[in-house]
Image (cartoon, rainbow, N blue to C red):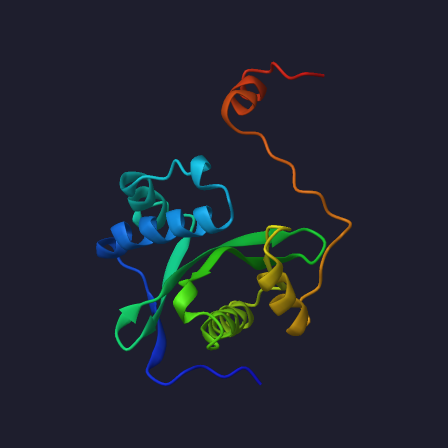
Amino acid sequence: MLKKPENFHIAPATEKDIPLILGFIKELADYEGIGDRVTATEEGLRNSLFGPDSPAYAILPMLNGKAVGFGVYYFTFSTVLGKKGLHLDDLYIMPEYRGRGMGGAVLSHLASMALQKDCGRFEWWCMRTNTPALEFYEKIHAERLEEITVLRLSGETLSDMAKGRSGG
């Protein structure tokens, strides 16, 4: 049974939390060794998390009234299941608060939400180099999907594909 600390709760993020969320995004990226790739801005987060066509949602794990990390999730769809799914894009707990059950509490919160929303699955990605997280996910019996490869078009390759100019 996952246990969470006393005086802990999960709050939906609001627009006023955007600078905090951006700071957490940068901390997470630095932790993962990809800090130089962060191009997110406060304006971009405002549009993506709180705009009229917002595709994603942010939550804040709170301990004693202080945000100690963030999570961002969105809904997907599986044609195989014929149901939507919940995808956790990022989960970050500040290093000094890790190991106290807060990350597990966030996962439990989102798993509960996935069931309430009739999702067929709850998924997330993890950097292969994030050994502590992978070990934790193994402990909670999260299934590693070795048969899937994540593919991506971005920047110039995205623009080229949109214009019908691919490498093929």
